[in-house]
Amino acid sequence: MVNNIRVLMMVVSMAICLTSVANATLGTATFYTPPYVPSSCYGYQNNGSMIAAASDVIWGNRAACGRSYNVSCIGATNKGVPPCRGTSVVVKIVDYCPAGCQGTINLSQEAFSAIANPNAGKIIIEYIEV
Image (cartoon, rainbow, N blue to C red; front, side, top):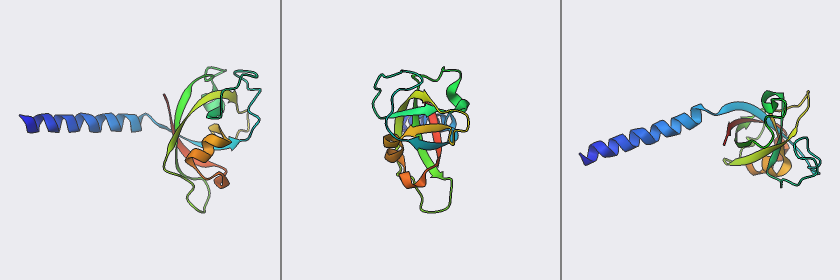
């Protein structure tokens, strides 16, 4: 009986992990540098440095304002040294990255640096709303 419960707990744990991975969306990220105000969502309100600007992919006519995303670097968009640091970061959408934006999410320099080497410039990411 105890072994059956352990097996069941392991199966449930694996299902939860796979569900969270399956819900992640692939995209790209770039970064922008201070000053971070004014922003499209909050004007001159300071929202810290773990912030991002949304491209048209997630902007939704301002619907993305205030949403938080967990963003993970999963690879490089160009050849060279792998940029990923093996961590993720949670960012709040505070701004709009206008047409021609080079990434799905334009992270603050601090957020980008937390997950990847800034010298990469642009990275492949997985992101999920939290």
